Length: 417
Image 1 (spheres, one colour):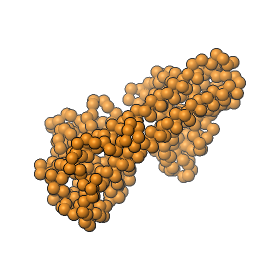
Image 2: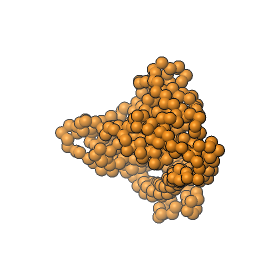
Image 3: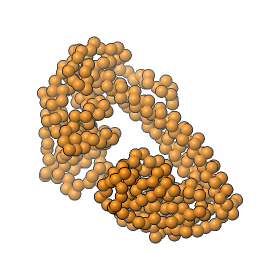
Image 4: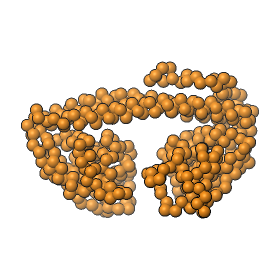
């Protein structure tokens, strides 16, 4: 791709851009107006997500569900939406393109369509600022929030309409190709995880070759029920959202001495089992001592079973499905220790056989994780390519090819970047 002739812009976050593009404050290009759904003029609900603006269905679990939709605001087709609240959080959606008339939170910023502009070009430009954390760095206030006037006071690039159209055509096609590539890789990762679960189940489906015992879980663990609000400032806190389903991987740790409700202390010798929505299979062996949310059962294995063996037992689909069938409560279904503790666990009497089963499962896991790491690396590379491509195109550093016929040069062949 050819490079455009660049010039200094005076914009902190985009110091160089195409020499032939205009530079303006957003307020001279766009307007922001709120239209509240006070008379229920519109009932089609939308949601701003990490995957853009999507349709919402009745009773879904996306975001918050207010009791009164009349507090929402109305968005029209070909407008932009921004969520510039709590800008300290860098892992949430910030900008979206509105694909149809619908309602979203009144806390969002609505930027009206300018018929003289290609709104999708400006979506890509603002999306570039989002992925470079520009909004996060300039947000003001205790919760780092930007207002509509703050947003429209930002300086933006305004290329000729013909250039805007060409950029949109090119980036729409490219991002579609990239997303298809990512979706295929993510599906392969999901299939690897399915294989892992099936393999674990297979190891427990037939234990007849071993001498085994059956006992209720409550006789194989000590149930730690004590809860407290009095903890040390340095305690490490583990919340449900920090635990990945099925894998037991802990993504992030929240360290704090302030908690809204009681917590439980755990040790790295324990197994933590989530009783809230048990179908999520958030079961983990922590590698640190700390405190956790009360929804996590703290189970301390006795000497009859290996900790790793019991952990695999508790994430087997048979166990998870059985526990999930016992839940009560429609909105926040949870299981009780009274039921979970009575579920019978079959296990080899000999520690060596327990250890053998654990070793077989771990060997298979290593094989599957190696493949998953490869696919994740490919996804990471293609996302980095996409971010760089959008930045270079929307700032005019790279010139959009004159011929925009589909040519997925970013993929050499299937599975290779």
